[in-house]
Picture 1 (cartoon, rainbow, N blue to C red):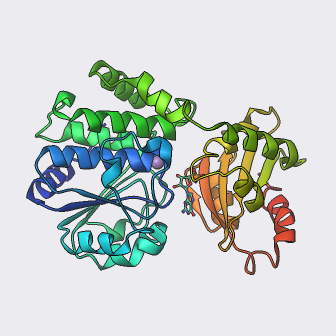
Picture 2 (picture 1 turned 45 degrees about the vertical axis):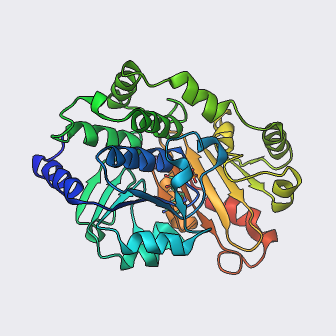
Length: 342
Ligand code: 5GP
Ligand code: MN
């Protein structure tokens, strides 16, 4: 991966000068947010630094196996703990998001922190002006993959990944695995090289896959079945969408992360070129997830219709009742319109 030599040297000197680095990532953290953040923390802790990971929301249960998962400071549960960590912070490492507003409620606390900010991310349109140093690649699987190549390029690692702690290497493989949907999308030659090197270094991929994909409760599959059966609509233009009702969420006792992957399933239908999931929440906006096949821009629809963004083929956003639509009854029509021009 070709990085500018001066950027790598700058990163190395920022990391080595820091005693209390803070690592931040996006709300409702997925495998890549958690994997890249905890990998960074594991590496910095191996250098003796007091690294803190600050996330807006708690990790889903299936990511609890990652080293350091139990030490994450969660803004939604402990805003004071997060503020305290930020008050002693001398370097902010921002992973797997492209603009400060993505941090939602945690944004002001992070903005006020005077420490230099380093961005390590793979989304379109990074907010470069808000960071002292930017590593942004979009032709890559994940923030975890980008961090892998960056760590390898540091003079102190000099390509020898055995110098990275085992927990760091496992977290990097985890983040890449979930963002590619287990090698199904946004996989590049560099992604296979990374996986191959990590597995050769001793990372137990079978263990990671078991934790990620083989440890859910039955209610998850039953809820998915009910949604696909009763809620999925396929439009004449080749889009599929469904609404995840608050009532269903409660009835099955679902938790954050339980329906991860559901939005990909309608893409298995030949004529479906875009899939949209809308999760109803009791008091906030609908949370929108979009996935598309090549040639259709999920990103454009997320930006133009759902106040969001992300990647070309995987994006997300929100839909506000009282702003985008007058009432919940109008949501399906709004979505049909948004998805009518692929
Ligand atoms: P997911 O559908 O898995 O929640 O998110 C898919 C992609 O869209 C992720 O890369 C994520 O960062 C991005 N994304 C999700 N929600 C939002 C949002 O509200 N705003 C923006 N800008 N991007 C989002
Ligand atoms: Mn990511």
